[in-house]
Image (cartoon, rainbow, N blue to C red; front, side, top):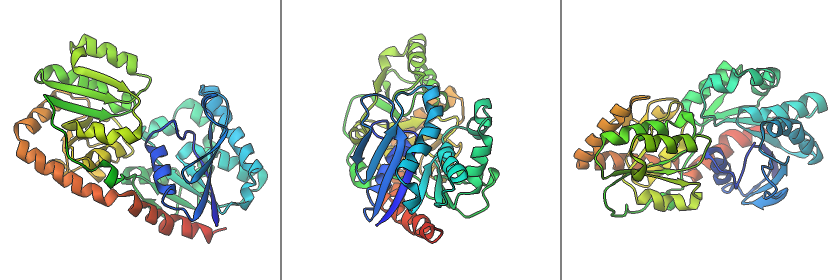
Length: 369
């Protein structure tokens, strides 16, 4: 059986789009033995456990910035301890995870080929040009230039690989959705429910939705699924805007509960300032919701205004309010757009994407060892 060693800063129970993607893809490739080196964020995280089709190995003892820096050498050391030379390939989940791979290749002469998957949601400047990242720029450059294969979840991120010096073929394989899990009927309820599933960070622009609420009818409420460093700031803003009673901060929601919560809403919204792709949009489309989003980053790969969703301007609460009102005032047109989005989401089924990963990425990788 082939063996792949994955490097990912986070993994279950700490879940974002990248972590969901790894689990959904690996669960569908049972003929490959997957191991993962990831960070141990707290004492509650097991140092080693099997999650789906991945044997997870955790290092570290905290989530501080220093712990994240120390993760790089710790991950490289653990890879050597796991006898990485006997793996058929390595897989870096996002740009920074090429750091430990670069260390084991440069200093320990490990020649195992590796895949780099670009899943980033932050702007290019944030990922590559922060001063403390520039300290590691030689490792980052090495990581891109020596990858055997690069995959990206959007055409937007594929350009990053070219800009960072990768000269090989780039496979755009998006994140996906479990259609069976997310499909279903929308549940009747009072009022109009806007919903988002987002990390509470600046790039996701939840603040713009809060500023739009005073411009919308009183029966329009906003449910926010997710946590993040801006939670307190956003709660303060909701109070300042006088919409505190119309906003529900529901915190972390287990991914298995997400379909039911989407089915109890009317419109999915995330007015992103930057976005690598955003598979929460695809999940909402699969659930039958119309989506409202900006045309930034990888979003235009699946969002066509008036066809598969509604496009709004960046940083414009007024435009958000106008588009929401239009969607509510034209229910048949909105229903048509939601149906078109739901049909499009079927091409993002995880089973289809897992087969592409196997054929386009992993099988060619074996030949490079």
